[in-house]
Amino acid sequence: MRIGFGFDVHRLVPERELWLGGVMIEHELGLLGHSDADVAIHALCDALLGAACLRDIGYHFPDTDPRYKGIDSRKLLREVYRLVKEQGYMLGNCDITICAERPKINPHIPAMQEQLAQCLECELNQVSIKATTTERLGFTGREEGISAYAVALINKS
Ligand code: MG
Image 1 (cartoon, protein in one colour):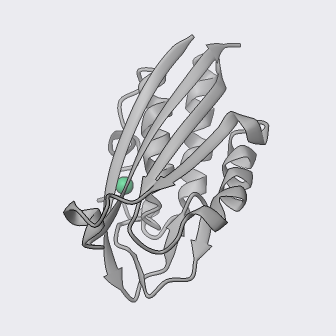
Image 2 (cartoon, rainbow, N blue to C red):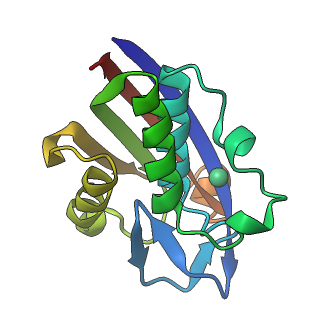
Image 3 (cartoon, rainbow, N blue to C red):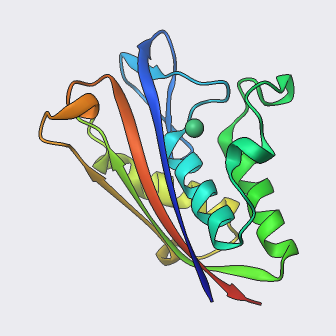
């Protein structure tokens, strides 16, 4: 078995949809990025790529490539998981922490779990998602952005 870690940050701006964990959340701000800027999925992709020693999300999906402009990050996650499987591995479990002052993330966690479990062809209990604030401290506390951390364990299939 192998383990990987991922981290990502995106800036919160007006006039963007807020996508987190494959779910669109009603909010007056959204995350800025070349793709849909789903920071939780990006951290998870990097954890999976790290576990398989396959570089990082920017290496596979450069933000200069017009093919990825506005792309649904669930597509990136499916492609990342295809690469992991190609190396002969399957997901054991993953655990994601989303750091945001607002909006409230907790009510959306079951829907996110469902989305991610679909992309990873796994059971809901293999995808843990947690939310925290940073007690109004730092850029997440000032609502300038949202960050996410993820770990993933993969097993030789
Ligand atoms: Mg990102």
